[in-house]
Amino acid sequence: MNTIPLQWIIVAGVVVFALIALAAWFFSRKKKQSERLQHRFGSEYGRTVGELGGRTKAEAELKAREKRVEQLTITPLAPAEAARFSQAWSALQGRFVDNPKGVVVQADQLVRELMLKRGYPMGDFERRAADISVDHPAVVEHYRAAQAIAARDDRGEADTEELRKAVVHYRVLFDEMLEVREGKQEVLSAREMAVHA
Image (cartoon, rainbow, N blue to C red; front, side, top):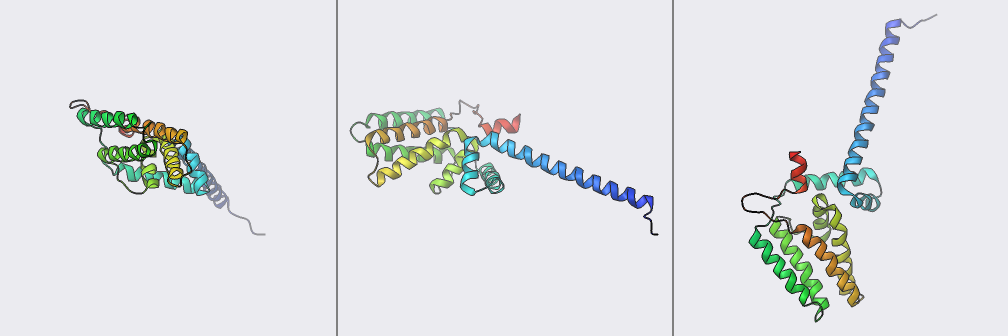
């Protein structure tokens, strides 16, 4: 009768225990990463999971967004630039009654100009929305809603009330993006604050 030496049983037990501990560590780390991404991206997390069909793909996409935006130089505006953008927005809103369709187009252009001035690249809409979602996840839904209305307007399907809503959505994004640098002190973005904390 063959018997297994006690030392081999002990070694096998240690290996099994180590594998169980490693698996527990891995799943704990994965869960913490998921929680971090859910907290950071809010509803954009759920939208991305639904769009890509699963958590693994969505989380890979969200981490790729974070890495991409970390490489950008996003800067607050100087007070004079912020004032110029604010005045442009006020003038734009004043023209809505006379030209709602034109104002929606102008609002989109002004938001793009503001984003470019802050340092966001001007790729296609989905890329812009993805970049915004990293530091401004609460307002990216407004950007998507405004763009959806603008697209319906291009097809002649949007009424004046919808156009008004599009301008309101653009305004929410505009206000969020209008970060101002005061003197030599900069207003830190949420990402920079997290790094310094």
